[in-house]
Amino acid sequence: MVKVITAENAGFCFGVKRAVETVYEEAKKQQPVYTFGPIIHNDVVVRDLEKKGVRVIHSVEEAAKLTSGTVIIRSHGVSKETLEALKANTAIHVVDATCPFVQRIHDVIAEQSAAGRKIVIIGNKGHAEVEGHIGWSSRGAEVIETEEEARAFTCAPEEPLCVVAQTTFNAKKFEELVAILNERGYNKYVMNTICNATSIRQEEARRIASAVDIMIVIGGKNSSNSAKLFDICSKECDNTFFIETREDLELHLTGSETVGITAGASTPNIIIEEVQSYVRT
Ligand code: F3S
Image (tube, rainbow, N blue to C red; front, side):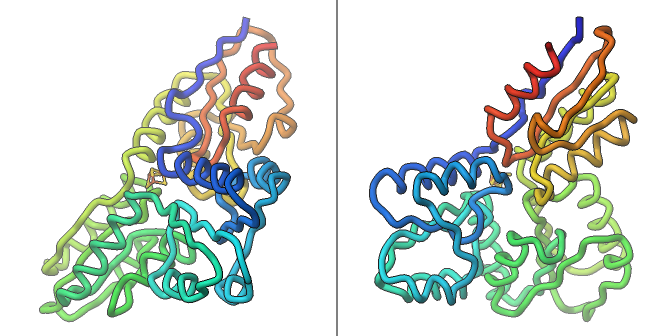
């Protein structure tokens, strides 16, 4: 019989759960409801919300044209400018579902940039969360994603730095990049803002992947935290699959395998359960 090990920390994290629940609640209260960008990187949830009348808008220009309704900011958060632009349309009600852990980073960036520190964000360039962070600095921010970028980074020796991380960044890589900056002896205030939900999920995935024959990572193709889980698991287990739903999976099991399952932060429980029962039968 196939042995299945499902990660306890698979699926929605606290912040995503909170944001998704907020959308469902708002949709029950009144219409129309919009989310500013897809609420999570999962088509199943986005389509289900569409059926409940929730539409996705993508820009402040679109929001400015709305004449009524509620606009919900997702857990990733937005820049200060975007938040202010959304609130400028008084015909709509803005509900901010930014995760409190992301909010804390916005606050640190606002405070530290105002205190004269140059902001360095260790994260993925272009990621919505990182873009939001940049927008809370009063003096811009530098994003460092790779070792080469950390080595190429320069600033005046007397300029103090504040270094923070994208919440879903790989913890080991963060330490490596900070170590490179340490070599220069900058005056730095480093705050490891990687969310626990991510490191706990990553560690558990690594542990399970190292002990199974087949590892399955469930997550949206555009979800960076799911891609990172896949990356971590692939290093431990050669038979690692990255799927979005149970339909993407075709396993030919002999029955003696041990199969591990984990899922990114945007994966609803229902999909994890479907994959579990497919593997078991
Ligand atoms: Fe928040 Fe951490 Fe999730 S920052 S959105 S609880 S990954």
